[in-house]
Length: 201
Image 1 (spheres, rainbow, N blue to C red):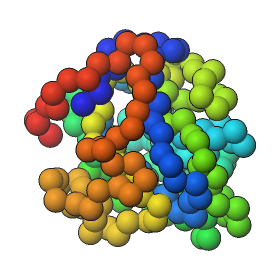
Image 2 (cartoon, rainbow, N blue to C red):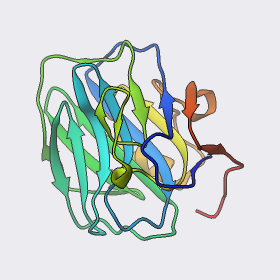
Image 3 (cartoon, helix red, strand yellow):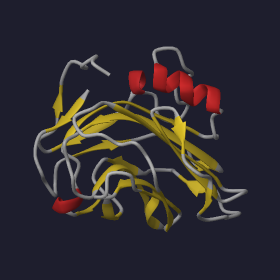
């Protein structure tokens, strides 16, 4: 697992992929934190959009912002607890423009964010728990993630509710075909630790 042990506007993990175009996205990850403030869980930035795909936890315990192609919606009523491992998945489809959050296998309402005929261009992207205000940087220390994170996967389609449940219940699910935790290509910048994964989910 990745451990982010302190507030910072520099430390992050940069994920890379050879995939170029995405017309749909699913991102799933597991996170553990005691943060009560706003913080980013997953930030995908491209040269054309700093919030191309972003999962952002707001300070109120039940609120998330979901971003796609620079626009966002908020989802409410999520049963989020501190000092607990959570499975978080977010989906977006470019055709419908609809996003959805799944927390520990439980869905939010489906909400429209951004419908586009242009697929996400991912010749290179920077994906990190730090929220990016520009491609690959301009991090805000007060939005940084502090805690542990593991099992980061990304698919180029909206995976089914059954697959999301399989991911949340682990360990049997179809790994991501864009980002796969067991084959992750990444670069660590700053104080981020690689540690044995804790199993007390």
